[in-house]
Amino acid sequence: MRLPVCIGLCLLATACTRSNMDSQPKYHEYAPGGLFRDGRVLQAPVPGTVARGDLARAEEAKNKPPVTMQLLARGREQFDVFCSPCHDRAGTGRGMVVLRGMPPPPDLVEQRLLGADDQHFYDVISHGFGAMYAHADRIRPRDRWAIVAYVRALQLGQHANVAELPADLQARLKAEKSP
Image 1 (cartoon, rainbow, N blue to C red):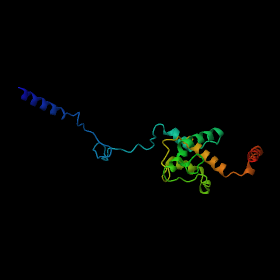
Image 2 (image 1 turned 180 degrees about the vertical axis):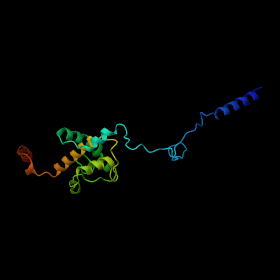
Image 3 (image 1 turned 90 degrees about the vertical axis):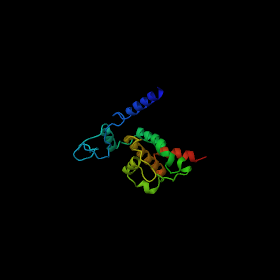
Image 4 (image 1 turned 90 degrees about the horizontal axis):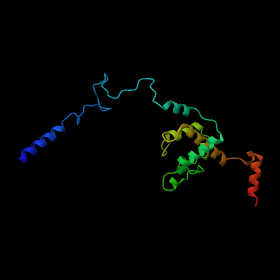
C-alpha cells in the first residue's frame, strides 16, 4: 500500500514543476524576439526622452558657481573626503593610499596643472583619469566645482608671492618668522 502512494506522490510532485509558473515565457533584453518589427527586444528610447531627475543635475553641472568662502570651505571638506587619500591634504600626491603601494597621482600644484583650465579638473573628477576612477556618481556637480575652486586655492597657496599679500598678512608673516 505504501509503494503506490509514494509513486503517486512523486508523480504529483513532478507534475507541479511543469506548470507555467516555473517556465514563464519572457524576452531577455539582448536576445532577439518577435515582439517588435525590428526583431529586437531592447528598444531605443523615443527621441527627446530625458531621464527623471537628471535635468537639475545636468543644469547644475553646466553652471559653475561663483567662488565664495562657503564654496571653498565645502571644496576643502569634499577634497579631504574624496581626494586626500591619494593626493594628500596639500595636493602633492603623497596620500595614505600611495604610502600603501598604489601608484602616485600627479602633484596638483605642479607647473603642468597650473596651466590646466577649471573644466579639466571638473572632467577628471567626473570621468576619472589614468588609475583614478570616476566620481560623478559620488560627488554632486556643485561639490565638484567646489573641489576645483579648492584645488585652485591650494595651487595659489603654494605659488603665492609674499609681496602680493595684503599688508596685514605680510606683517603677520614677518612677526611669525622673527624669534
